[in-house]
Image 1 (cartoon, rainbow, N blue to C red):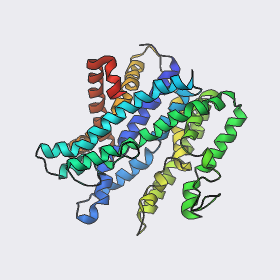
Image 2 (image 1 turned 90 degrees about the horizontal axis):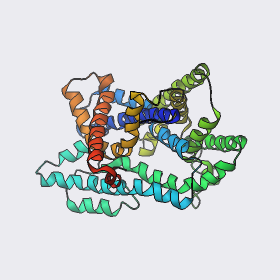
Image 3 (image 1 turned 135 degrees about the horizontal axis):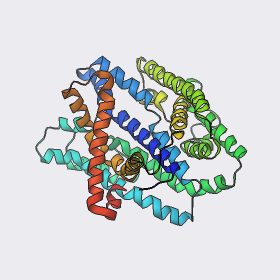
Image 4 (image 1 turned 30 degrees about the vertical axis):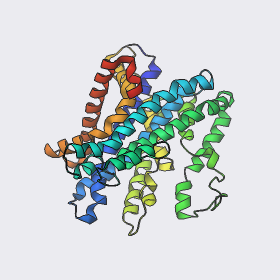
Length: 382
């Protein structure tokens, strides 16, 4: 399988983003243990703290995926209709099928005679341990507008479909805009990343927002579309040497991590913290996460792998299987957690070890299913 060199570095970024994402979810059992500690759960402070460290380090996972969307999709080729017809069904049908499977899984465990505690074991953030069919049906009925924390990773698909709907419209501007104009929009987007902190520490209602208006001054420049434009911008305008890339990326990475990690720990020490405050310094559209994301992108962007190499073929397989891996990987979070505990993996390595187990299990299953079903697998695995 031969791929242009550009695609190989994109696949390398995708691998990094996947590893970060799986580390993020591999840490869920540790965070859940901390959240439920007040109800009498045993808690290993060292594991929780390493969960926080890894969780802070891997925040660029989702922004990296979105930057790749910008790299590979801007400007959009063809008509709006053809773009929608090609992209949205490949996302929507697997999302629908797997959402239904996730939401009925607690009911299936009940049919198998398993104790209800298995629900929390499988899905760390599940709202309850209910195995009732009625609860599964309610979650399925809500799919058009909401996700359940049984399938907490499905939030991304709602956002991704929104980006796909927006892409042809955004693309028309990107195609005609000058470099300077793109930099102005990126500058306004960077300012918007400070809004979560401004709303928390300065004023909840700012720049025109109030009880009857949520769409303030920076609203139209905020969100994940900024990461899309950033990926496109770096691809077309940035071609730094390794020395310059390292000189800029490393301070961004270290500084972004320190803000994210120390900010999260500060919030966790507050006596009456809200869920919104807990997520504040881990929010994807914040300057600290953007700093780490740009750093990771710049470093991997410089990697050059021969398109005919075995590594390039291996990475191409990840691209082919990637969406399916995302769909099914949460079923293996508890497998990685239990295997790491059984093997007595040291605390600093527990989360990356679990992430590798999740990746291996998911990738193998998706590869085998795609090989068995061929083109028909698109409706199941994208």
